[in-house]
Every structure is written in structure tokens, then in C-alpha cells.
Amino acid sequence: MSRNALVGCVIVNWNGWRDTLLCLHALRATDYQELLIVVVDNGSIDDSVERIRSAYPEIRIVQTDKNLGFSGGNNAGIREVMRHDVKYVWLLNNDTQPKLFALRELVRTAESDYRLGAVGSVLHYTSDPGKIQAWGGGWISLWTGYSSQATERPRSGRRLDFLTAASLLVRRKALEDVGLMDDRFFLYWEDAELCFRLRRSGWKLGVASQAIVLHNLNASTSKSSTSIDRWYTYSAIRFLSQYSHVPQVASFVFLSRRLLHRALSGKVNAMGNVLLGVRDYRNRDRWAPLPKLS
Image 1: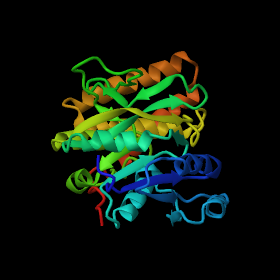
Image 2 (image 1 turned 180 degrees about the vertical axis):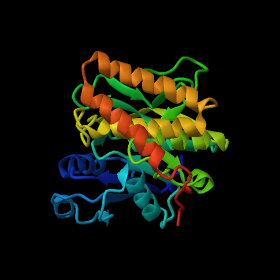
Image 3 (image 1 turned 90 degrees about the horizontal axis):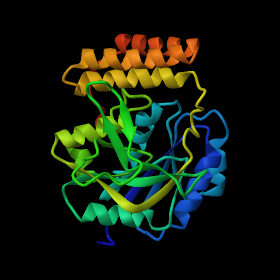
């Protein structure tokens, strides 16, 4: 593995400076020195910028002035780090804490095969470090919209459909080939869409089995947040419209399962948020172009 492979790390912060400081503290201990870190403050309304700048004055902070969503925030950071001679871009959630050798293992895996467009980590729960949250990524049924995370190394020959962007190393050449994250996905499914686009262009996905990263799941969005169902539904329908061979059937099955589950659980408000997600998709510009690198 070349020690000259410069990595640009992008961390998006939205009113989450406490998590971001823990993440930066973990990165300070990494054994990989060729690392350029950029924090994107995604329109925080608290004192995140001041807190982060005070603790880490050497870290470059990009301020978007408004919440651009997960994709838009990451794209702002990708553009910034790619102004430098980085070979890889590391998308890293602010609610993660990478282990000492995580980045070294990600780069080692990426360097082992030039056809790898992206390499994922093995995510463990911060609250239960011995338990795997996601072994790199997971699978999506394009017939039902159902997605599932791998919680162990997949059986030989079974390929992952996507990698989770909680910790995702992406090759610069791959981004130059397929473009940035699709910022029409404000929240959820954006990492799956990027991975499907990479695969469609001939790039491979990989997982660095020793790249362990702790992840405090749902730190940025509460599980009870009313926006989760709305954004998840919107993004799922958009994804299925782009990649399913039978998008109308897949969307119908996806929505039916989602509404039925909430009805049986007595979550009437959640059902309304699912329907709002459908309305959002119908009202938005479905065919807007992908964001450019420059």
C-alpha cells in the first residue's frame, strides 16, 4: 500500500457538535497520516461552528448557511477536498468513532484492486461495541423496495448491493466518472443510489473487514422524528423509479407494506407522513440534473 495516497475526509455536522468533537478526537488518534479533514456545517442553528473551531482550529470548516441535506452537505465537502490532490474521499458520519487502523484498512483494501470504486467499513454499535450494525452495507429488493443490512460477512459469492455512507471510502476517479451524490435525495437512500450508479458504470464495491467504526445510530435524527417516514418514503420512491424494472409495482408494494405496518401499530400520524412523502415526490422536479463536481 502506498503511503502517498492522500485521503480527504468529509464530516457533515448539523447541530451535532458534541458527536463531531468525539469523531474528530478519534481521527486524531488514527495511524494514517496522509489525511485531510473537512467539516461541513450544514446550516446549524446552534453554536456548532464556534465549538468545533475552538476545539480544532486547524480543521477546515465549510459553512453551507442552510441545511442541504445529507447528500448536499457531503457534496460541499467533496468539492472542497477534491481541490487538493486526494486519491480517495472518505465520507464519515459525525456520529462515528473510527478505530485506530480503520482508515489504513480502507485504503489497503482499495489499493488491492483498482476496479474498486468504493470500500465500506464494518460498523459496530457505539452502545454495544461487540455487536455489528452493518457489515459494509446490504441488499435491496427492486421488486418490493425492501432493504436489509448485512450483519456478518456475506456467504461466498453473494454480492452487496450497496455500502452505507456512515463510513465510505470512494475513489476519486470513480467520482470523476459517475459524479457526486444525487442531492435530490435530501435524506436516506443516497448512499444506495451512489453505489448503484457506480456498479452500473462498471465499478466494484468492497468491504474492509478490519476497518472497524463505532456508529451512534440515529444521533442526528431521532427515531421519533416525524420527518423520518416522510423523507424515507420520498427517497425510496425516487430510488425505485430510477432502478427498478417495475417501478410502479415496486412502489405500490413498498407503500402497502409501510402503511400496513403503521396501521397495525396504531401509528396514524406515521401513515400521514408516508403519504406526505408520496406527495413530495410527485411535486418535486424528478428529472433535475445531477450536481456537478465543479
